[in-house]
Figure 1 (cartoon, helix red, strand yellow):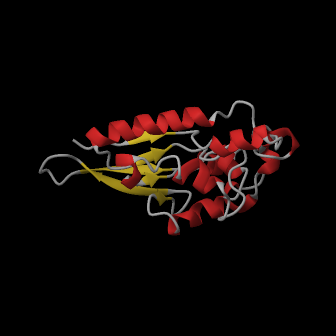
Figure 2 (cartoon, rainbow, N blue to C red; figure 1 turned 180 degrees about the vertical axis):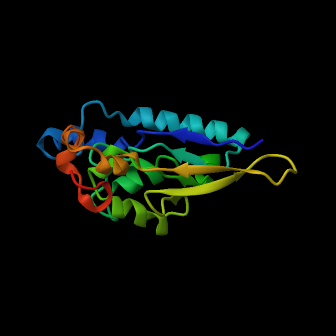
Length: 180
């Protein structure tokens, strides 16, 4: 068998810390009252327990990797506090992560998220759109193609009235999401 895990909306440890320190989203910060780091850690522990037996080939991130405004730069502490330190547990520590972008990620620095691929052996995001293959178990030589898309980026091509209704539109740049 070939197993993989999927998870989205996971990077909240730093969001909770920021909220408790008064760095609130409504004031331009990254803290939000619904971010609970202990729940993120509980999920990571469960993933590590399951990884010991299942040995997943990868983890597929479904976006919103860092709440609530993505990361600011390649040196943003969230890479360490809300990803590297949280998912560095037992059998999970060696599993590669295939990263997908979400709207919260686009509120920050998408280029830094892509560049983190060169810093972390587990973080794989070479571009907002990419594909990879997963071998189908058995001796068939067959594989499944996994296509990762940036749905926020696709929104840049929608009708003008829809563009105006985009969530977080004031935070997006044209670099990856098109005109806001």
